[in-house]
Image (cartoon, rainbow over all chains, first blue to last red; front, side):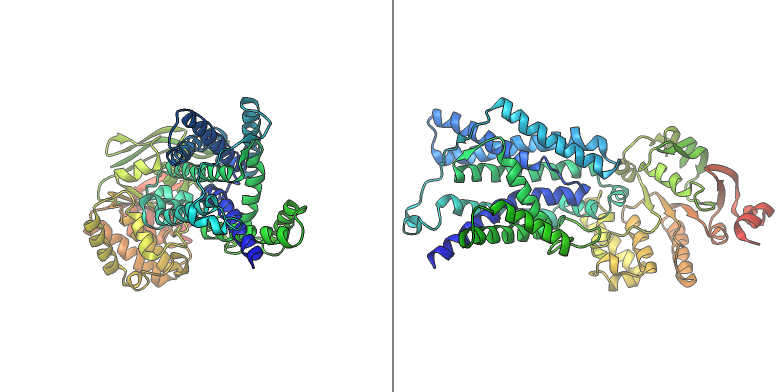
Length: 300
Length: 235
């Protein structure tokens, strides 16, 4: 039973992480129908930014809780700036051209960012300090769940609640839904579509960066390549849930997290990644619209 | 109120509008008729700034608006009901109306306007919580016009409001267009393929062919014109 619970919670952790990345994918897809392949790199840059902030503040002798909060916030801001800039440089000039052009630009941006971090930092794995203390009340179940994981659950849940509120009740959220359904018509009612697109990239990127900092703390290391794998997995999750649908992204992430966790736990851990991609192929064959996806135009 | 001077609009390398000039005075209903592909919708999209013209000037209340982004043009008082109605399919009727008032923040007045719209089109009140995509064609057209009115436009651009609707519904919608014009003093620019109906509704008309304006006159004179009758009225 303990083993099952451990796998269940492990799956929940994976699922929450995937969700933090998949939300950005699915939001951007919902607004401009682009698979933003550079999104995983944003997550990685978030993790690196967090590491830099943590290193500096640790040297200055700050309190560890304050450090992790500040690191997450700065990483979110910095990655948001990256997301904003990437859209302006790599996607906006291609708006109105074929979808494939923007997709190729996205892949190029992803490779560029990976190599940029590789050159600016190092190809080695860097150790990532875990600043979230092990809480006393968790000690009896320490072999099943760690405090970092609890923080990841809470962060993911808060992000989902905040996003739901944003989409349902704010002016910007309404504009996002309208743009997702009909971009030209949104312009005709006075929505500044460029602003909505920039906003979407900023929100998606900062959520991914939050994920990057938390996951790197949880795993304890980071290198320039972590964004690629995490990004691809989150992409699978977003497609599984129905790309363009935000509840779908969360559901897809949880399903993928749990299946991966149980598969590796009970069957074999060697084929973990293979399994995720077999999953993707199966979805694309049998239910291309995903679990919650509509087969037509609606998104966000 | 609206002045187009030598407008040239392109889609890529294809020129859709060739030196279009037009004039619409405050309080008028002006129609633009012509065959499919003549450039009528492009004219509206150029005015709204969605497909900005490459050359020429558009003046709205003596201010140049060509080159301004669509949201600024809406905020100046030009609303468009595009061809095919373009209802947000997954937003409810109420949310669609709310989107029409996107640039306004006078909440109480917006409520009043919605009440006014529900008076104008009682069927929309009945369907207020239904997704826009589930409405019939006629209901969607009513919603599309209502959504445009929610911006309180000075100038209303209507693109083919009769398209694909039953004659009775078309009559209803044109009655409302006249009512909006006389009661709210909203200027209307009406693009139509149904030339007969359009010329009977409007004060003045322009005839468009292959991206050029080939005729401009009072609506009753165009209705009586031999060439117009042959080409567009099928008489």
